[in-house]
Each structure stands twice: as structure tokens, then as C-alpha cells.
Amino acid sequence: MEVYNAYSMASVAAGFTRALGVEPPYRAQRIARPLEQLIEGAHCTRAVIYNPDAIAQWLWQKYTPDFEEVYRYTSLALPLRAVMPSVTPVCFGTMYTGTLPEVHGIRKYEKPVLRTDSVYDALIRAGKKCAIVSQDGASMSRIFLEREMDYFTQYEAEEDVIAKAEELIASGKYDFISIYNGNYDHTMHGTRVESPEALAVMRKNCRFFGELMRTVESCYKGETFVGFATDHGCHDNPETGRGTHGTDLTDDLNVVHFYGILRGQDNGH
Ligand SMILES: [Zn+2]
Image (tube, rainbow, N blue to C red; front, side):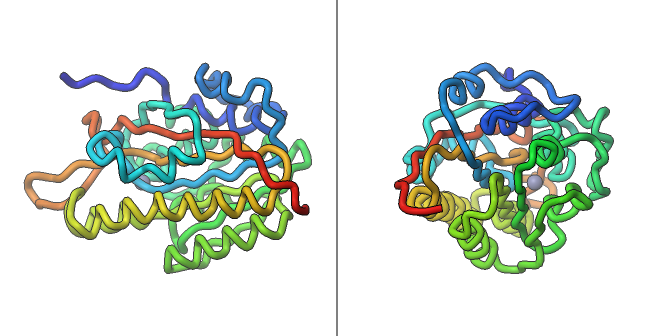
């Protein structure tokens, strides 16, 4: 039976801002209730969102133990339905504006600068300092450009993305950091969704998340809102034998985000 997840990918953006006590992006949809409940009562001063690309819900269901580093630092698993077409700029546009593609305007695989009010715009209005760290040329390096925030998007290797993110966390300079890693998406497109290479980078995403969370714990004080938030799923194209996505199959649209409130060790910043 094909069942789509009930909560939309458009229902997390207002949670990202609410977690920091900030008004939502202008047109953002209502926060998914479980995320609202997680945030209620917390007093987060910062947020760190890790965005791995194309980690389908079915991957998590099939390889559940591989995500133990993610469970360790989060307390909410939130099933979400990505948007159509289920490709990277369309889905990240929705995730960070809280609007559907017909509102934010990216409706195919293209990477224009989004003019729709986003999480970043809302945070900047509230005086927060934001940064995006990503691989060069990635959707996340392009669609939120031209804002009063910092972009660290010149990297090729994922290790360099993570190292830079750790440096930014340790600097204590930012209130909100998005960290994008396209390694799984890139690898499954070139092989299959469950090739040994693709599964290895899926696991690597979980390890990277753990590393980042340990940096948050040791460098930040107080409470930090954290997330492991992918954009869409994936499936093998029977004709090419390679991984793909973009369709309305549940394999492409159903994803699970993981969110938590991490408490720092109060040793500075
Ligand atoms: Zn993607």
C-alpha cells in the first residue's frame, strides 16, 4: 500500500524560527504539531541544521541501526511528505520558506535566488546571524543567496564542509547554521540507491552529524535546536539501473526528519 506521510515539508520552517523565539517567514505554513511540542518550553539560543541530500524514509526503515548517531542527539522523528517535483531546489525551497512550490516559485530543477521570505530572512529581521555551509554549486549554495548572512559554499569534499561547519560552531559567531551535504545523492545517482558506495556515504552522513553534535555540546552553552533534515527520497530507475528521484512515488516523497534540543556544556561563548 502506497501511503504518503501526513505532515508536509512546508511545516518545519516556522519551527526553525520559533525555536529561536522568532516570528515565522511571512507565508510559512503552520508548524507540524510534534515539532511545536518539542520546542515548547525550550529556550534555544542557537540552531544547527544538518541537511543530507536524498535520505529516503525507506532507507531509514531498512537500515535503522545505521542511524544511531542521529537518535543519540535528537528526540523527535518527524515523518514528512516532500513536494513535487521531488528534486533538491524545489524541496529545500519549501523546507526553508514553509511554502509550497507554487508559492516560492521553484517548480523544476533550477537554482534561481528565491525571493520568497525564508527562515533566513525572518532570522535576519530579528537580528540573528545566519550561515550556510555547502558544497560548491549545490542548490543550498545558490537559492538563498543575496541575504545579509554568510556563505561558505566553495567546497568540493564533504570533509571540508564538515570541518568548516565545526569551525563556525566553535567560533560562537552564528545563531543559525545550515550544513548541506550532497554526498549520498551524488553517489546513488552514479550507482544504485543501495550500492555499497551509496550505503557507505549514507552512514557517513550519520557519523558527520554525530561529530557536529559533539562540537555543539562542547562549544555552545544553553540549549541548541538541532536537526537532521533531508530534502526528498530516492529509488532505482529500472531502465538505467541507477538511483534517481523526482517522482510522486512514496519512495521519493516520504522522508523522516530528526529534531532535538541539545544542552551545551557551558564552557565558553
Ligand atoms: Zn536532493
